[in-house]
Structure formats: structure tokens, C-alpha cells
Length: 121
Figure 1 (tube, rainbow, N blue to C red):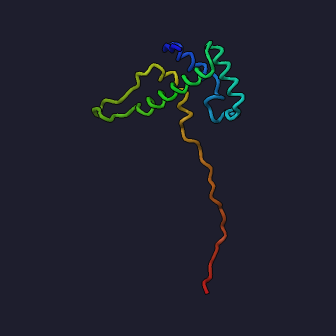
Figure 2: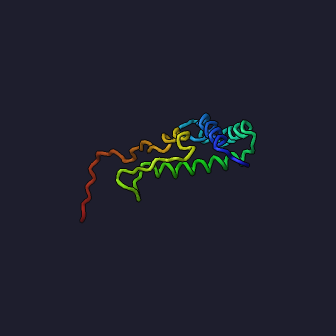
Figure 3: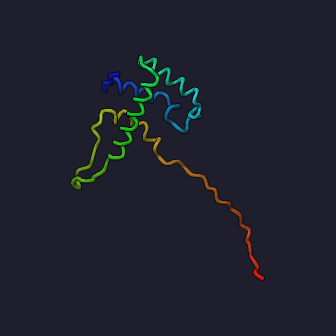
């Protein structure tokens, strides 16, 4: 299947409309049956096979992660030359930046105030 930039952007927008596919805080995120139904709906909207849609989206996500990692780096360049992505899908996928933020952690330490003493005989 030939994927033009315009068609890829359309797929990205359809993906964005369904947080169940990309947002781990979504209450339906772990419901694989629902996710599959959403992929089927996207495939229908795009007039393509589910397998092709998912494969292309994974490729786009990989490219976005690569570009996101390179963004702002100065490696191999002058001090004032900072990398800014020119990849066509970079701006369209900015909604995923929240997904990559670290989540709050839970304190698993016990807060016991008991003093334990050991007597050696």
C-alpha cells in the first residue's frame, strides 16, 4: 500500500481521536477486544486492512520516538545549532508527549516506628 504524507497524517489524527489506543491512563486501555474494535473502525475509515494500519502506525510511532529523542540535541553541531525535526509527522504527533512523561510513583516503604533491638548473648 502506498502511504502518502497526507494519508499518514489522516491516520495519525484518527489514532489521536482514540485515547484507548495510546493513553495508559485511559480506563479502557487494557481492554484488548475494545482496542481491536477501534483498530477495525480506523481501518474501515481508511479503507485498508487492520494489519496494514497497525503496522503503519507502529512505524510512525517509531519515527516519532526517534525524532523526539533527537529534538534539542547539539551532538556533532555547533553550540548554537540545535536539532529541530523536519519530519512531516512530528507536529501532528505532539499529543503523545504527555504519554512519555514519568508517572508518579507510590511509596512502598513501610512507615513502622517500632524500634527493634537485638541482644547478642
